[in-house]
Length: 93
Image (cartoon, rainbow, N blue to C red; front, side):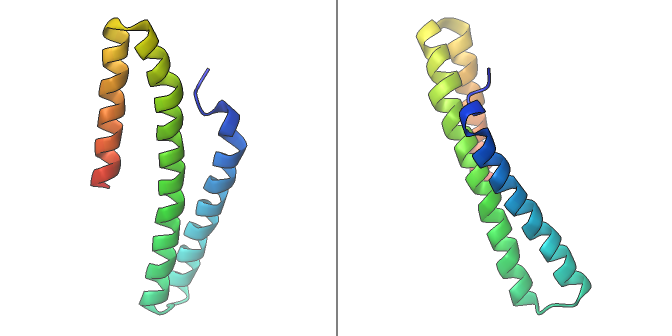
């Protein structure tokens, strides 16, 4: 079972919001909307996706990594490496 199963509906709601924002940005570009207004919407969509990413990371740490830590050994090491790599990707983006 994945760690985010209890938050699935919240995550899907956030993703639908981000999807709508991206469609809005597409429409704004088609309609030659002022660039600053488009950038404002890009920022909002980015924040919505970051919110999803942070929620997933939190769930991964509190569920998958915590469970693996209790088991110890190579499984724990792998989950910690995965979490570290995911954090690095989020920081770079």
